Length: 305
Image 1 (cartoon, one colour):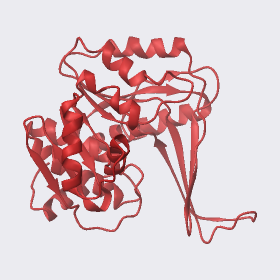
Image 2 (image 1 turned 60 degrees about the vertical axis):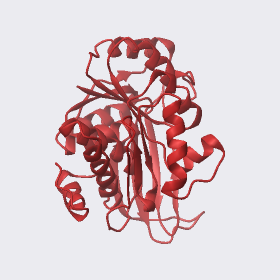
Image 3 (image 1 turned 135 degrees about the vertical axis):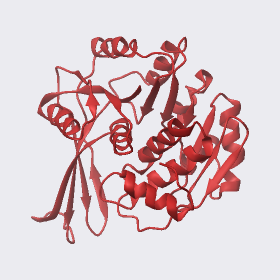
Image 4 (image 1 turned 180 degrees about the vertical axis):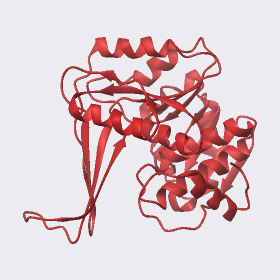
């Protein structure tokens, strides 16, 4: 079974406004609303690709109930822990001449809520997959990812981590199955600028030396590369398409990588499925569908899925 954890889920309210003007009444030309959060995105894309998962995390108030309802509508199973104080976030994304975002705070998650999450993690069994993705709310310990991986270290669980800087570096000693920084995040870790795939490879290998099994690096318009635990490097330009929305593209890449790996156990298939799933989401107003991913794989001469 695949489990995803989203500590701070959101309702993503995406509005389009022609020529937004500050201080004036503006009217929308289009409105979209989705359940949001990196782990939730992974779960939704996995479902689109034919793989079930269970979304874990915290919810609160009427917004939390709506997030759970929207996931149920999409046939994604969730078991969110209900927090007593506050509401789940509403994140407003404004599309106009420039894109702007206003992200909410989220509920007040307490120690008792965190302990409930650990009780849920007790259900994970050898062979399961866990996805830890996104930032940690300020009300939670900054070591949360590391604490979870340490807690589960006695089990044979493959853990995917999509996080930045210290959140990512702190988990390496527990040998995550795959980590997915982008090239800018990887460069920040080592205080260098990484623009080409050749630039990226030695630094991805340094993360392997520190404990990561597989390192998947997204590079936006430059594509992606994967350094595998068996010493291989896969790299590719992205398929052709028009970018409409980059939100969720990285999460989609993680979902595609896992789906490709579960399908065959082959890292090459996992890499290309991840690359095309991330691209499919970027080329759409919604998250990638299986047909969209297959079409992009076909562009690259691949017949996976």
